[in-house]
Length: 115
Image 1 (cartoon, rainbow, N blue to C red):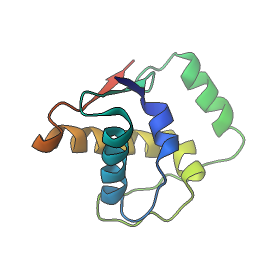
Image 2 (image 1 turned 180 degrees about the vertical axis):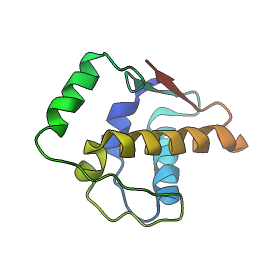
Image 3 (image 1 turned 30 degrees about the vertical axis):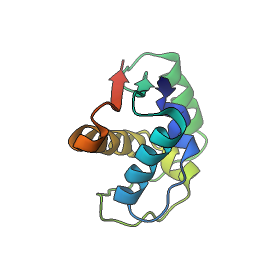
Image 4 (image 1 turned 90 degrees about the vertical axis):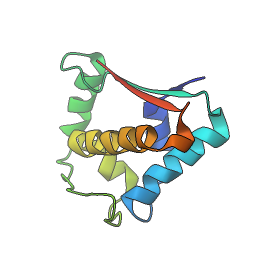
């Protein structure tokens, strides 16, 4: 089953550490979509998509904070505020990609970034 990564970012709450958040994303995907799922983050790498234009429009309303984090840091902001910043979102997607690909127990579960 193909899963919209943007939907997934909204569906799982940010809580605890970022490592726990990534585990929650993997668990949510397995529970709701199964082991044969492919999570696709479409348009996050492109510089000229309609998604980028919409993200810029939203970002112009307020300046979202750029949060430097790793797996061991506790989440300290709202999910909406965190995801408004494109760099935060890409760091989390990268962390998720590493989580999906590094664990053998999720060998059929895949994450894909497209332009």
